[in-house]
Length: 205
Image 1 (cartoon, rainbow, N blue to C red):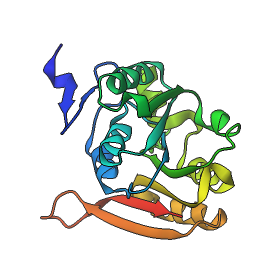
Image 2: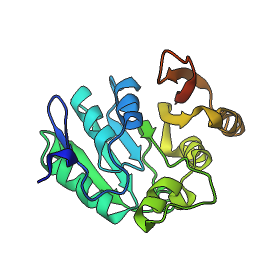
Image 3: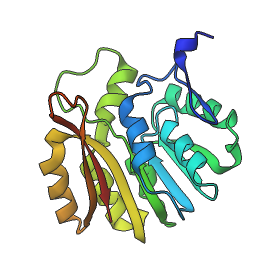
């Protein structure tokens, strides 16, 4: 196997040869930043190759994680990554459209995490899988917030997401409309020399 497709962490590896969207800084940031202590039921929306789910499984030994992913190759790769990890009995891949799947869920989650597609440009990526992963075909910050507020998240639970700084106003509006409170907001500067904020880490409750 080409080693450039394997990313090594403390106790696991992530293979992302087939997935359209590769392991990146955003997922690593979110997986390390979100509070996971005491969480038993966790949902990873738009899980890709399963990086964030694996990080949470490593950090919280009592967490059982459902990873929802619509893109077939990414879901298959996530299953392989989960099966190869020390926590395969606590990780489950659900290959499904999130919005349709969420409509049938009646058991809430303690923690919901998502590094969703956020490319809103009308110019789609030329590769169909990459376009699906990046544009989401209905998986948006607004749809995630609405689903969380409509019973997918437990009353004491938390929704954690990462977004470009340009989406701050949209997400604040979605949270207000869903009557969710902002518990934490971390502004991420990728280059200290510029001081320019490029990403936001959100915790809504």
